[in-house]
Image (tube, rainbow, N blue to C red):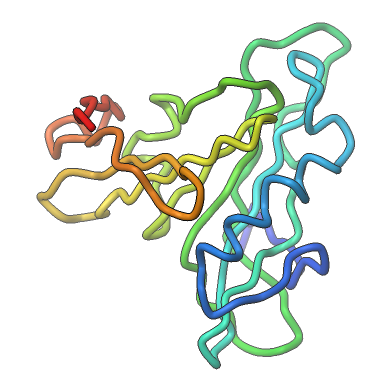
Length: 177
């Protein structure tokens, strides 16, 4: 596959689990230990995936720093290339979610991150340096709204929807809690 981004799995910093939320809860603290993960305008964004190889357990891939060349000047926007292949010696991989970090605090899931063109899997995760975790369930190819959640403790709070007519541009409508 020409131009494909691949990563190795499983990531030994993340304990596999039959509960995908248990894997999600381990991601941010592990990613924040990586070089420049908290570097703000001089930082690095990391991308990876959550997947299974059968047996009912979810694993996290190693994070990839692949993206635009880092510059020695501050940048207000970061990006990384989402992996689309995982190499895991345990078996055939089924990808369920992608994740990416933002290298500064108080960074919510951006509008570009919510656009239909960036959705490949049934879940999209994003977190910042304060480990605020956000989840988009895009409902790819369905005429129902995408749902945006924020992790609060051990549960998810619905904070917005992406109406079907707004999926192309990623416009979120806030939901009263």
